[in-house]
Length: 92
Image 1: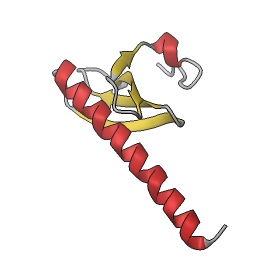
Image 2 (image 1 turned 180 degrees about the horizontal axis):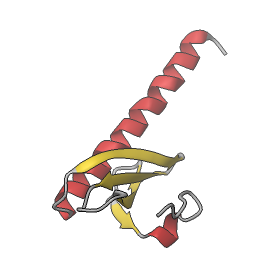
Image 3 (image 1 turned 135 degrees about the horizontal axis):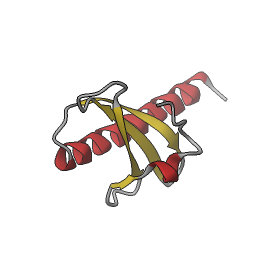
C-alpha cells in the first residue's frame, strides 16, 4: 500500500468517527438537558457506529448514554446498557 493510500484511509476513518460523534452529540442535545463532557466511538463498521456520550448529572462518576449512528444517514437512536455491555464495563 502506498503512503498516500494509508493517509487517505486514516483521514477517512477520522472523518467518519468525527461525523458519528457530531450526530450523537446533536441527538444528545435534543433529548437531554445536561451539557456533554464529550463523545467517544466505541465501535465503528461499514454500517453504523456506536458512540458513548458522557455527561455530568450532579454525581460522580459521570453518567453515560449510548447511541447507534447509522452511516447511511438514518435516524440516530439511543441504546441502553444491555445493548452495549459487550463494549463497556459497568465501572460504577
